[in-house]
Image (cartoon, rainbow, N blue to C red; front, side, top):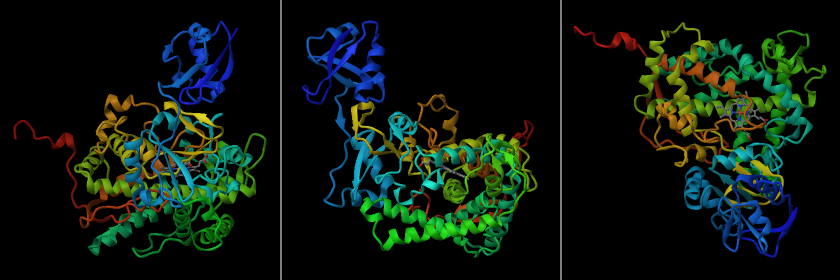
Length: 559
Ligand code: HEM
């Protein structure tokens, strides 16, 4: 056993820590040991130096004639870089007119992790898949803890458990036991006919708009469609959004969308702002209360598929909707989701469900009118798979649509709607690259920037579904593609979202030819929690003819 003094390269040589080194330890073991003393998250990056010479053997480290410096991935430890801000405002004015473009610029300038301060709120963002994966893992270093710097702070609701609550709570553990089975692949499959009916009902309105020769705002109709589908799943409610082209959004949907907009306005500034008793912060509190009231009413009114209690997995397959499920599902100890959690768990599932899917659906339509050849290839695939107006869109059928699958994947890469998955440091720690992160800092894996990082994706600005067939993409680094986040707090609704989209798209593409109305640049709203195209207008014209099947379309040798 030898005792050696260590210090972090880049910090004072006098701030040393003594560590006992067992003579049986190998080099990797030494790295792990030292990493644990200094809260270095990734031990494999640890290196040792003495008087500027690298030490490669345990014996060299233990016998060095003075304190040994620790490097991380060849670097000294360093503060996370970022632009200097203005007094009080910090970087707010520099970033918020276009947070996607400005964060991209900052990553290019400062590297894989950046720090900005917006009106007192400090946020760290990363476009590095390794750091993102570490943050998402729920470990001794990181957890989802919604503190004052977290982008969901103004919405924090511990009773919700999922999404708006901290991981290290009983509420999350219980909600996370009960909700995922209701959204698992098998459970979601039994909602396929409802999804199909939802989009078929909506076509009456798109047909009417076509007859009138009218273009329509894609996001406005996709929010109607997305929320119509999610409302039936979560609350058993028919929002009746497609009674006519002018039907307004249901009040509940308007309020949830308003909450997200208000939260973005409140959370992009310091926590002092969220405590103001007037303006946006006050409206946010009032709207939350109104939503709670409405969900309680709809729980009373929701359709029930039966009265008997059922084990979780059975309930997931038999329930008519998530209210029915939440009331009847029992765990293996015979316990149920507590009443106090039901209201907020359902609000969250509804909100998380429709805001995201409606944004993604909007981008998918954007792709049809923006990226050449996509609409034609998607349609051709349907024709080649014998699709027609009466086809039943089971998951067995949609699994055959391999180009559609790549199109959706590429859309989720290039135009991912999510922005907010923040994770909080549980202790002062050191990230790969030597970046120091203080306890309680919030790191946001910036999904858009990871998915568009040129170190991970060749020509990331190019929309290219065929890249998903390449070895480069098949062998991409872990964490390079995480549209639904990762780790224990990742999306639990992704099966539902993907199935819904895979049912909606064929129906729309087979029935209509989409063209963009006007040529205005399509913009997103930087003050909304999710990224969605704001001003995209399209015409959807009923198709009257379809291409022949590809195998019969090829000219014969004699012609
Ligand atoms: C394209 C569609 C969707 C996308 C891109 C998406 C994305 C995400 C992301 C990134 C998270 C992590 C948030 C965080 O860490 O703070 C998340 C969590 C969550 N999502 Fe989704 N989501 C989608 C659809 C849905 C649907 C349809 C539902 C439910 C019907 C749903 C329910 C949830 C819930 C409950 C959580 C919280 C899980 C937890 O806290 O443990 N999502 N989603």
